[in-house]
Image 1 (cartoon, rainbow, N blue to C red):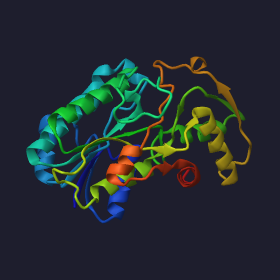
Image 2 (image 1 turned 90 degrees about the horizontal axis):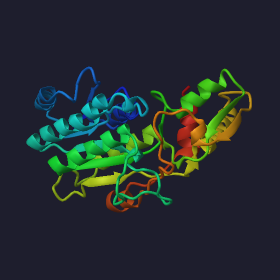
Image 3 (image 1 turned 30 degrees about the horizontal axis):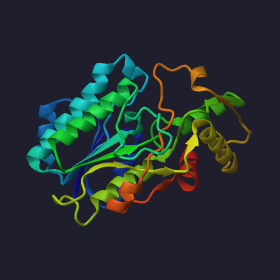
Image 4 (image 1 turned 90 degrees about the vertical axis):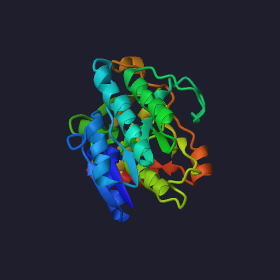
Length: 293
């Protein structure tokens, strides 16, 4: 099987490339400089030259705060780029797997979000990602939209690495405790996507295409996640001192855009339709991420 992966310099993109090569697939890993998905002609030329069996789009504009002042850039990548990929995939009958986010929701729901819940983004980033979802659904039927939350991993910038960096200079940090969600390992996301690609009926018209939520457990606040990061970092020998983690409200943390109060995703549909189990971040994936630093 030949797979094109866009955005291979990102957290999930890097793990996708490594995992796909590990599984023996022929992989074309493309950075944003190698493929500008906002360039329709470039996308069409790429598909023509590579002739992949599937494209996995991990390319995205993900700067949540910066998106408020760079809306054009956010929409160019997150909507127009997806639109271009969808058009090209439809023309070549190529399945398209696309990563999306919990930020398409406003976070007001108390229970975990399911795929049928109505999106209502509260910032430009979430709105641009939703626009990409809508474009893909309108254009091309053979698609999987995988929504994920609170991504962390060994590669790129993420919350875990930020906490470890802060621990180098101080003995305590303040972290919001009124935003609830689920940390999700980039490596687990990569495995999920490639497990989907590896299904025996993948690519067929009858395959259960559509939107799916990839659930990660247990759900925690950012404050609780930070505490667990430091506990495991100390237990693993990554750091020696004990960090103090102070709980604060979101209003006390300077941010240009409000974050969803609840980002927890329900993965019942993906388990039932595709046999993909929920991911547990606390035992294996977090320790692996910590030891890589």
